[in-house]
Image (cartoon, rainbow, N blue to C red; front, side):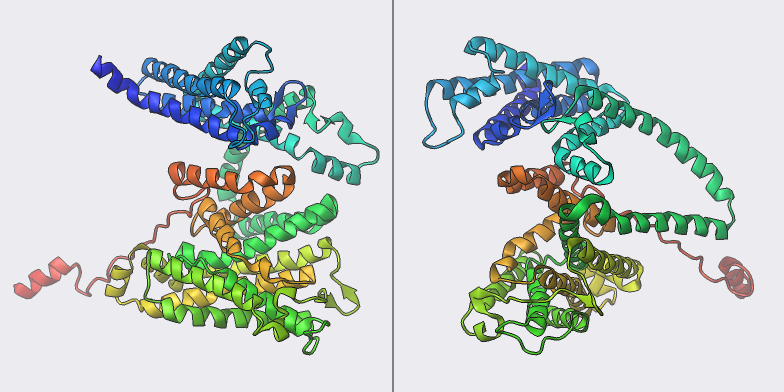
Length: 564
């Protein structure tokens, strides 16, 4: 009996955790809010995915960890029962006892939703139990599938959910490109029509089936091309990508262009902070300082309001803002350069708060406006042309992002980048092998500040007004989360992390109240299952050259000849 309980302890605890997760999601109000958003018309809503998703994940995880299928199925059954009992007891409790004075979302409407709208509570609980067990079986079945098929199913599900959640934006783009209302063929009241969902799933399976053939054909043909021809193909692919980016803002409209511009600004900051955090391992939580310096310098020197000092041109002040941010990064690095780990993070976080309080202070109010901020900051212009709309400003941010991508990539591959990585891995060893850690760390702080100053300068000109509350500690936290989720030291990871943490929440404003809750869940999931990030930096293999041989042959032969 004890041996059986010992074997079942882990599945029971994991099932209980899944049940507690469902309870937590329900009490936060997420389940009811998501339940109002249909994914496939009349078939599935987002709330059901949130309710039964933990059971699917439970079945997948336990089956993958099991030594064989029989043990896996037993563990999945036990875990699902534990999760169902925990969630069922919660439903019975909130149905019998009112706790809405503490948890406002623990309402009869929540009970009705979790019991599938059944009038009889017992019937609803039974239906919930069957659905939860079925979700666990689905997860277990996914674990037994080949990895390629499982990934295809996940991709198809992601495409269907994404199309439904972005239905308004897809409709807007279709109306802008095509005449009439073609979106009515795809969506009904914001949900995908069942036939369209089936076509989307089939399209994903067809595409995934074509990928291996295309990849094999490319692998066979590309090596056979001459080096010059390979370079031309690479340039053509990159040129096509740049062309897509150039026409993108006019295809998606002003709102999506605004979202893309915000994504670009955070990408600039993430690329800069990646130098300090991802390459050099320096946890800088005061990165908003550089952002604020660039923004305020641009505002002070270009505005035409009460704080006007000269009304200089945007293009003239842009490099000045970058240099000022770099100088600020240098000054802030000097007192903390010998700190490591948590102490460094706390010290730099203090700098971020200092800059916000200085911006609010009466001491600097005559210069930077205090709590009133700076108004009347002009848009960038080239001659008579003004970058007025989000589509226009997108090109400035795109150009800045591409330049920073090239610069960061070159730094990553340089000798300085290797020294940063040596400090990140072990500063004591790096110092022992002759690396000047003080200078290299100071350089990391200084260069990382440049991108923050650039983003701040563009941000000020984009908005036309800046206020102290725009430079809170939350900016630094968001940028750090981008790096952690994407992958430290990975440029691809920065792009993915920015799209996930900045772009997607901007598109899903209807769920904005749960933004930071979902941030926390995502960070925990990444820390547990993908500690290197969703797109970690690729491992590097450096070629070692053999030592030069003496003129007389091998070292052994030379020494033998000398001894003879």
